[in-house]
Image 1 (cartoon, rainbow, N blue to C red):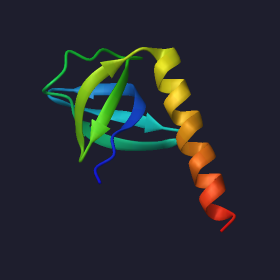
Image 2 (image 1 turned 90 degrees about the vertical axis):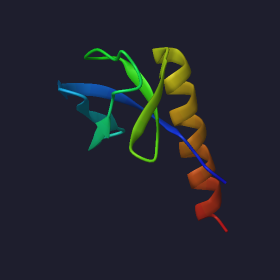
Image 3 (image 1 turned 120 degrees about the vertical axis):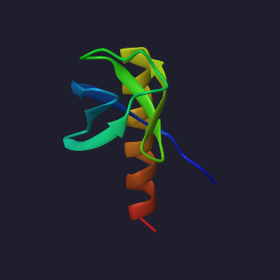
Length: 74
């Protein structure tokens, strides 16, 4: 199964940028989307594949956190 995860763009340099994933910043290829600083992007395999609304991104982040907590209980 493939999973994409949302993060916030904190810097851009050319076709790449740093994206904040709940406190961890990762270099991401932004060439497929017209992302701007502060945008939330959906990232899969190091590539931003879609710009998402902040509220939607926050909902997904909360869902992934909840899933992680539930898996930790097993």
